[in-house]
Image 1 (cartoon, rainbow, N blue to C red):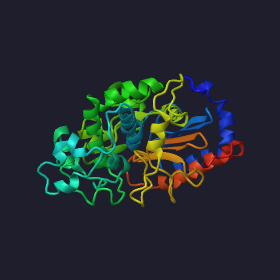
Image 2: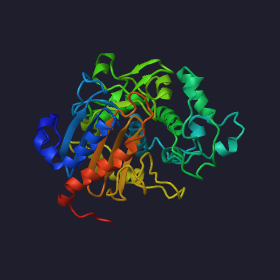
Image 3: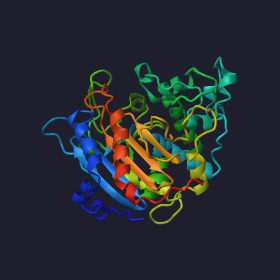
Image 4: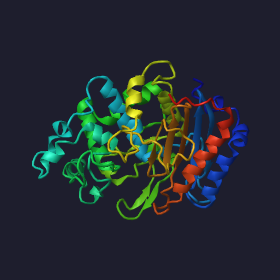
Length: 385
């Protein structure tokens, strides 16, 4: 693979990529002008090469705001669910330390003991947490009443089920908070330490990690002017309040990274789990298992940890059915077409200065369509075997 440390060596020239991906640039420039987000970085990986890596706009809408660079680090928000928790789950599964059908209550007894619906809760498995079919609610502002990690985790353990486990798909932050804690118990250490050593370092993800150092925070675009909970500008610390109370490390949020590192991770996924050095990080069988859309519940677009394209997918109209991806609340996204060996990431801080704008919902599919169309002529035929 042609991935090296210096971005200048892996893209032809800024001029060439701006010509080739002119429509994609136009989508982002229009979005910035219309205040969908103040700035963005993006990257395109195809058939072993990075075809584009760039930044547009600024950290904020202020005229003197720092300019976004190709290497600008963003709060990944829920992309943490795949780069962090799902990666850890895959490794623990391969090492025989994680059984997808193990009952969550066997690892976290507080999820069952003393609960009125204990029989139902005993049906919740790690597979269901990964597939978002556990019956747990999507979200709850637990940080409002629980201001310590232990208190917030206890509140997660007590969350009532909203549906029968396995009956329907409901994207759940609560489920991934509990999954992250279960993974720590199975790994025997905190999630950040495990992911840093076992995932990020082998892949050379030098810009990726939880809890950025205080000295680097001014180089990260702010995500919100929080006038309610923290009552300060949120910059270089996790945007998600529940994760903040958990200390900035969780299964559902907390990772920071840049477009190049996200593409480095994606390149491993499309290269049958191999690192740049040719070492196997994830086996092809494990990748296939986790990337396969679940048969149950029938209404789900979810694989294990990953999402897959649906009718109104943020990936646009062209990614094959054999694709996986994920979104982040702060305005981040990653989509990987496994058939075409194509990966595209878009990182923004659409929550600045507040989270009210939903314009990115239209920007994302338009951007991914524009990127896809720009390289479509040179694509290899897709195998549907």
